[in-house]
Length: 182
Image (cartoon, rainbow, N blue to C red; front, side, top):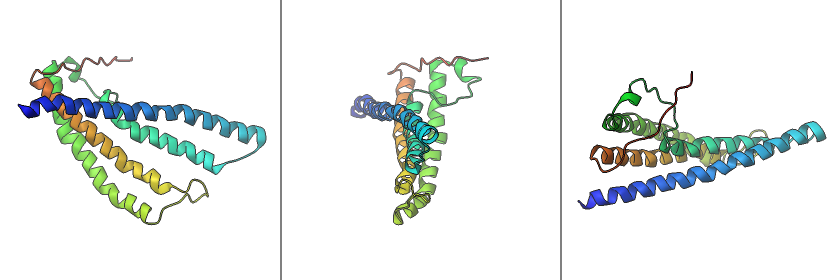
């Protein structure tokens, strides 16, 4: 029974970690908009072009997308084809989410991490820089692939724990309603 008592603590920690990362990275959207606005003003009002500033928008966009994926998974915000899912009971949904996490999410995350490792390692080996003279940290940008996979794997573990708790009747089911837009 000791493991069962630790499951909710581990789940809370994993969800909390994902929440902190997601909410922190969300601030980059505001910064990205301000930088993009500055780029437009500088270019069209003052005829000044900055490769570094333009690349910084691309880096921030990549960070928001890649580091926010686990937060989106946590809040069930990814695209779902739920023809049958929404009509299922809480336990039925838990089974689908459990099998989806075990047989889709985790294997795909492991495959992407494994197949991307050499790509990222090669970039680090040469400390890859921007070919356009912009930000000299392309190797850091490419590292986000592995960070994204690690965050998704952690959230996948949280999802597994949550679904098992739901199936055991020790946690409430997913109450998120997905509105259908016509």
